[in-house]
Image 1 (cartoon, helix red, strand yellow):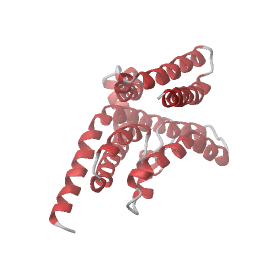
Image 2 (cartoon, helix red, strand yellow):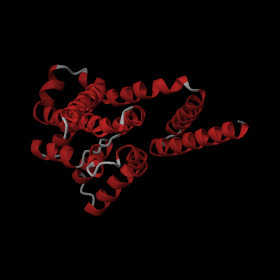
Image 3 (cartoon, helix red, strand yellow):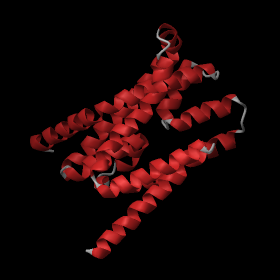
Image 4 (cartoon, helix red, strand yellow):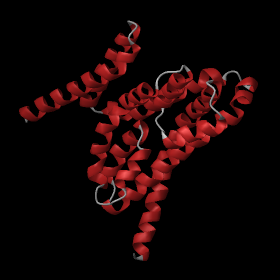
Length: 239
């Protein structure tokens, strides 16, 4: 490999880390919450860290520790965790065309999260092919290690942190929704995306307000996607 290629790869890693750094503002507080909750559910600090390291599934981890602590059958825990993460069946194929020139892309999908997907979906098409793998690797590893580090912090000293600063109990759960707002806000510059996202937001709020929060996200996502593709098809037909 030439010195130029190595230099380009290094720059791509640094660029991925830099672009993913804002994700830490949402990941670390929520990971701290998970470490704390896992301890309260009867998991040891090291078990909580292993869960974040191996499962690395955000909301599914909270469901996992809750179901295990309540004595739910293992098969049901596994099925529910897989169902919640079924969205990755859509995420990975959308990124694969930008990374399929390298044999490592499949394994890197372990580090794919909602936020990393949103970031990569915007950045990868704009990068030269030689820099895409390095960029994704840097962004993915930073997000993954920040989640694991936040879990360790919550597991080992979470009780002390929330005891000293009780306001953290109110702030930490809001960190991840705030991060999604930041990632979605730039999309409202397009009327097509604004219509689709607006539809999804309204539907989700209606379901949540009527006592159906578990249905809110999947139904809103499906309807938002339907609005996007229908309007996009009509626009192309008019052209």
